[in-house]
Length: 492
Picture (tube, rainbow, N blue to C red):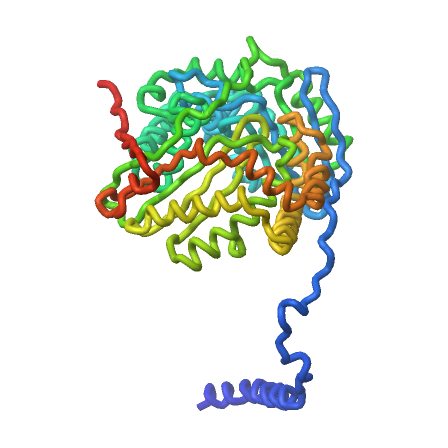
């Protein structure tokens, strides 16, 4: 009984508070205007803010290392990146996978001063991270730390960059992981479609499309990894960027202490860019009888970001794609032919990218889906876009581009990328101005110049028995070329 009376007494203030809240809620009556929904045309939004480049400093060390510093004291964090002039496109053709393996092993194997376990422990104790990697066209090493731990983590970061151990056991582990990826690479239809499409456009032996195989992986030795590292990771081929809560004078001293004596070893990487030309055109099929839908990619070789009509093509992309784009409205919504559909110009900084379209559709709708997508590509070339489409597309490009500069870290990364690929530092502002000035005639002219139906590769991954009509119905005299995706097995 005593306990029950205590509970009741404890509940009395709560009941009183609940009653008071009820009275207040009844007394408050929202105005009629607050409850009246407004049409979206009546909503008012502030003007889009201009992109602003925060104050930063750029300088070079005597050994050729380029440094960017950008202070940002909003949070007690510091992050940094080293961008290396290297990439998988420079690795030997018989050792595909060497660049990726080198990039992963730089961090995984620890350093000559700290083994992997000790390095991991020191980072974990500080809630810090260091990551490395090498992709198709560049290498990178990154760190993040609390500002109070910057000195200790930056020293570890310099150690990873300059003195990786490339431990045998870690290299063996990575090779096993890569081998597992090879064995599973045909499990994902999306992956098959993307991989084989690039091979058809660039050529199976092109550095921009070739894939790691058991044989190329087995050919890579620890000595190969060390040589590729020495040729690639050098101060004169590195851009170091630091952003966050630090004092620039102190950071300069740390950079001088930890990177000032760094020198390259041996010969530098031969970094002449590989030649690029389109390998094939036509209709191709990867038979996957277990699939109940078709995965489609179509397109051809594309271009670069520094093309004079890049802004017009970016506007064209918005007209074609997205929830308000022509493809979504026509192919997906009106005709109901696709789960997803797209077609866009995808340029690269220093080599030709792709014009790529496609999507996923029911097996029996494969041919109508391809025909409808091709019809929209033809229409963007032959018919001028409307004033409404132009205005909406320009707004979409400009509005979305701002989100690439939301933080000082994003801005610094963009500046480093422009320097790495030889673009002017004001490229972003040039692009914005060109988008604002783009006309419907310029968009159509760019589409006519850059989209070439005669060069199209059309690739379908699906069940040929369920694709009715067959792919040979796409055009008179169409020849459908089968693609063999059998994985070459390792030699005994």
